[in-house]
Image (cartoon, rainbow, N blue to C red; front, side):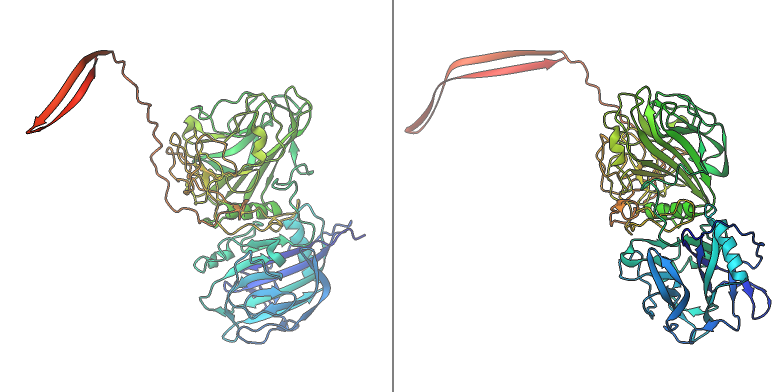
Amino acid sequence: METSRPVAMLLYRCGGLDTRVGKKDFFQDFIIMRLSLVSQLLLVLSVLAQTQGQFYPFGLPRDTRNPAADQGSSSAISLSSPFLFFCRTYQQIYVNNNGHLTFNKASSKYVPYSFPAYKKKDVIAGLWTDLDNSATGVVSYRQYTKGNVLKRATQDINDHFPNLTFNASWVFVATWDKVAYSSKPKKAGYDTVNSTDYFVIPGSNSGSSISNLKTTSNVNVPGRWAFRVDCGQTPPQGIFYPSGSSGNTTNPPDDDGSSSAISLSSPFLFFCRTYQQIYVNNNGHLTFNQASSKYVPYSFPANRSQDIIAGLWTDLDNSASGVVSYRQYTSGSVLTRATHDINNHFPNLAFSASWVFVATWDKVAYYPKTNTETSFQVVLISGSNFSFILMNYCDIAVTKLPVEAGYDTVNSTDYFVIPGSNSGSSISNLKTTSNVNVTGRWAFRVDCGQTPPTTSPSTTSPSTSDSAPTSPSSTSPSTTSAPTTPAPTTSDSAPTSPSTTPPSTTAAPTTSPSTTSPSTTPPSTTPPSTTSPSTTPPSTTPPSTTAAPTTPPSTTSPSTTPPSTTPPSTTPPSTTPPSTIPAPTTPAWIDICTGICIKELEFCLEINEFGICIKPFTICFKICFNF
């Protein structure tokens, strides 16, 4: 029985079976796009593994070739099965020689417009640029409704979207094989009507790095990017990453309890220290070396001997109500979403997420108030040598308990306190503030090479991340916060496209770090901290050898900022930690003063026949001596 019709889109680069010569060949100058329409069935099919590289078959006698024409296109291709693309159903498609697919009409455009473009059409850009198949190369396409290609598509989609049970019923393969191009602008990804959904593959808009497409991925298959593009991909709980699904691990309901040691499937670099394990503590914080039952947060900077990430550190009690859970991801829609979010918040990095760890506190009560509910999330993201933290906040109940949100490091060489998070009466404001202009989200770069991009600040806090936007805190040393753009929407179990709200293309705003802490300015929409945020991009100066760089976030664009249009600052972070200037002391003085008055004085001046006299007056003097 058919229950839904999810659709997946795959972009493949480099390597495949060239059936024209009957052997395996590897090509570096062409792109294959596969669109798979699949039906979700109760029956799961077992499929043999394929060994044909990323590329689906092309160059067969039954393939249809586009005319060899610069700026040319196919005629309208009637689809054997309707294709659902972000809630719009299409019966036809055009394969355009310049590297993109359109649905309503052919396109001869050879200069890609920037995504999001807010146009009135849907476009899929395998590699949109000025290609010329009249000079060299072949552009071809073919549809499949049965056979080995459907089996392969079924296996690939189930591998990339493990929480869905797929059975492919239709596949469309478009191939640009060894086609020549000029030095015009380039773009890979997709955009939709009014840009309600869009995605740009990191690094694809730079001609100098375009060759890296054959090594990057959002599904851990070098040279392949996969997206779910039907009508079922909406991010759960707004800015929250998926939580509460069957794949999550739940902490025991235990006041002041914790998870056991969680082995990380990928090492996490936190301010130059690499960790292979982590603990999710019920009282709202993460630790690396051991579990923690502490329910009273110590004030950052604490100058302790441990690293700690505090989503909302306070006396939480999941034995009364609520759930604390966590999950790791190494493939699928969550990685796609993380890639999109980080590139939106830190626009100067061509980042591709390879690992995501999501810890969620869902409607957990404060102790002993069993009728309170607090929901927040800490997301760790890594890829290559980059590491990031996202802190997402939903409904946060006010409390009289001590609270704190942010992070601290060994000896407090880097730390950050989210403005207003150390006051129980204003803690509920966390769901409305941000350093990346995404309401309720704070983003930080926390690896070993953080230099912050610039954006305008939305709240005051020190910046600490080198390459990402940061937010300065009035009391914390530098830590990085990220520039921003709206988060992409993704389906819970499948790799999906960015959020339905298009992120803005501008860099995130940043705030300058306070005088007492290194730069870590993440902009927030409401600056709670005592230090007012500066409109200048956050400083990237790391406070110590482990200090993180900083960068400002934006809200419109990526994340929520409405990202400011100001590009992130390129100024490298200073390696000198912020110095604290002691308040001048006032010496104790002994003052002795005396007063003298001379009364009834009269002054006259006579010159020739003229004279001037001043009536009697009094003069008083006050003389003081300091000892």
